[in-house]
Length: 182
Image (cartoon, rainbow, N blue to C red; front, side, top):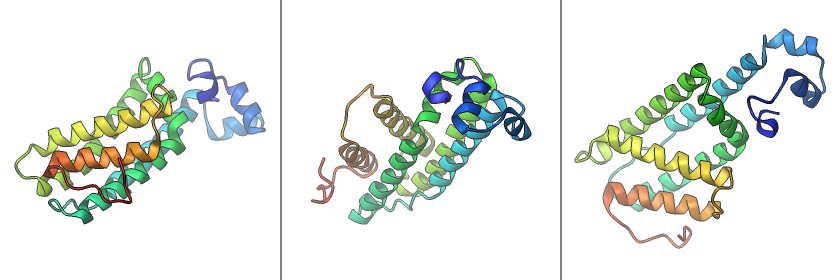
């Protein structure tokens, strides 16, 4: 309902009808629409941080590193697709809801720190914190624009391109494996 109607327009009545449940059941678990949204946002944040923790070791410049990065970006894309409606709504809610903005900000920090820890050894000649922030912004916004249909891009090509750009940013360009055309 949040995705269909937007955060501000969605009502508890809408949620109850869509879930085919009663107001009593809703209020047994949540005190308000905001409480439900907070719980959903925390689920998304936890899934994103868990994914960040799964980012493989980024050893310098091998094809295995590229493949591992590509596979991880495929998982990111799948997670973003799964939670896309919630992420779109969350982006809207962050404009006015400072608590949701804090949850989102905390997520970016945690996600970036996980990426930073892997980048530190992979490319010691760059500032791992700034590189992590740049990569997070690139990955997240690319997925957001595709999810919101602001850009029409083949997701497979997007993931392959993001993997190449990230890998090239760390180690310079490598030949593209045939299985991952850009």
